[in-house]
Every structure is written in C-alpha cells, then in structure tokens.
Length: 279
Image (tube, rainbow, N blue to C red):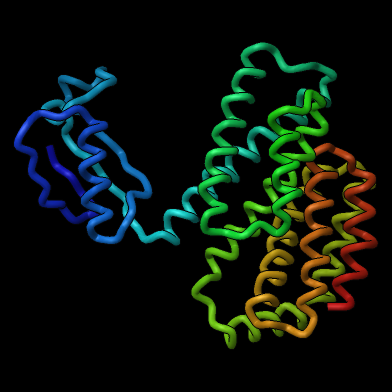
C-alpha cells in the first residue's frame, strides 16, 4: 500500500492488516500531529480487489491525500455545503414548478440532508460568526421542519447566502487592510459599469430570459459580496451600507430560489442599483 500527499510519497508503515476506517484514523492522527487536517482523500484498490467495497491495507494499492490547515478545511466544508444547498434548492424549485410534491424517497433524502446541514453548520459556527444567528437558526428549522416547500427554499436561501459570505471571508482572511482598501477603490471605479449590468439583468428577468439573467447575476452577485467583505476588512467609512448590501443579496437569493422573478427583477433594478450609487 502506497500513500501520497500530492506527488510526494508519505513514509507511513503499518505493522498489521487494518480496515480502511482504521487506516484513516491513523492518518488523521498523523495529520493532527503536524497541525494539519485531511481535506480529502482518494483510495484505489489493487486490480484483483477492484470490485470490493470494504477494503483493508492488504487490498489497497494507493491512497492519495489532500491535507491543509484549518482555513483550508473550512473552505472545503463550505464548498461542500454550498454545492449541496445549490442542488437541493434547484430540485425543490423544479418540484414546485411542476406542481408536484416530494415522494417518500425524496422526503427521506431531504431529512437526511437536513441532518447533514445542521451538523456541518454547527461545526462551522464554532469558527465563523453568523450575520444573524437567530435568522440562521430559523432558516435551518424551516428547512428541516416546515412542510411548505417554498418555506424550505426560503430557509435554504438564507443558509446559502451565509455560506457564500463565510467562504469569501475565509478566502479573504489573508488580505491586509491596505489591500482591501485598494480593492474597494477598484470596485467603486466600476460602480457605473455594475449598475448598467444590473439594469440588463433586470430586463432579462422581465423578458422571461431567466437562464441568461441568472448566469449574469451569478457573476455580479459575487462581485457585490466581495465588495461588502472587503469594505469590512478595510474598515471603510461606508461599511454600514455594506451590511445593507448583504441583506439585499439575501432577499434576492430568496426570490430567485423560489422563482419569484418579478421580485428578483425589482430588487436588482431598483434596490441594488440605488444602493450601488451610494457606495
């Protein structure tokens, strides 16, 4: 059995045959001794055991590890949860649009997913501060207990918005105050351009060109989230307005996820464009 971290082989010897979960426990302990974490791993079986599910050390050919520090681990967990929330949100919206309800398997999958979201959010809040802890708790309760699918989508939208903010905060954790101030200045130089793009997105919504509007909105929304976080880091004079921007983006996410395109167009065309002018 060979173990690699990236392209580098890890000198790791076993004195007995162990099942993979036991191997992973030992590798996790080793990583922690290096003040690192296992972010991801891939396991390849020896050819003669390729169809076997539960492998032991005699049957494994290669284990590839990705390790990193606590920031890397937080980013990985956030990306995993964002991906899950995106997939669930799109599925629930499709069910609503088709006038259907969840079948028993979908209901059970959603319950299991709700447990996954709750556990991971609980871990993340040990390291990251929510924008609004009460709102996040209410959103999680709506996702897991409210039978109304629209309320579930609204709860999921609040969770998504918080996760995306946390991800950018984590990614920007190494940005200095001076760098943040420079990037805020660059953002302000583009507010006219961004306002024009928001106008075009709103027009696409009202014209029924939903997919094009959503694709363009994804890019602009990320720019606005970045600006809000950078204004905080830079301790910008208008950072309070950045909080309003975060709130508007949350409202927009709810509208989009519940396919309320009229409200989404209004938020983009009026609320966001007006706020951008003041930033």
